[in-house]
Length: 151
Length: 133
Image (cartoon, rainbow over all chains, first blue to last red):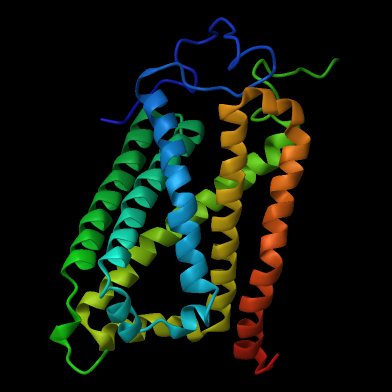
């Protein structure tokens, strides 16, 4: 599982590598293993979330009366389109993994006792999985025709 | 005693980048904590219009709208600062221009927040004081 007790730089004090480490020219990057995949995932999901999350926030909270226009009918009309259902589901999945992995990195920095670290991480993984299931079921099964005359 | 310099540049070990590093963490935690609640409140839509419209009616409160403005700012800051981090990561030579790139990303964030604060702030003032700006 994703619970690692290693520090930020596995294989401490590596020799300076041209381009990334040393020469005071770049930033630290994990040398390999799970932490390198985590590093790669945070950047790929970050680029996608740049569009998904910023777009969502601007559409739902800023333009065109923002959240003031959001009600059941608004959601029902919006989710008529599979594009918005897919957008919202992709946002749900990527934001949950990106955010919970971010929390894992923060926990790794501040929680030193392995038992507490494991417990806190497991709590967030379980919460994230539960919210993933809840959100996925709602996004793909929501059917406003159960409530006629509301849209 | 001479100031000790980090082995890996200065970005994550104090001085120029430490405030954006801290802000990146705080905005990230704020957004994920909101997301936990937001998945649940959106899921209520599956229980019908009566339940859902009652949930979203919390946004009629101006304090909630102020928090909402904070959420938009947090997402934007985290996004723009994340781009800055990736520029440094993928083009290591760019760290020679760290101050300029950091200043530019902060300026982009602030510039974006001006119209957003105006648009959302008008609603907040309307709800709080009945001001129709």
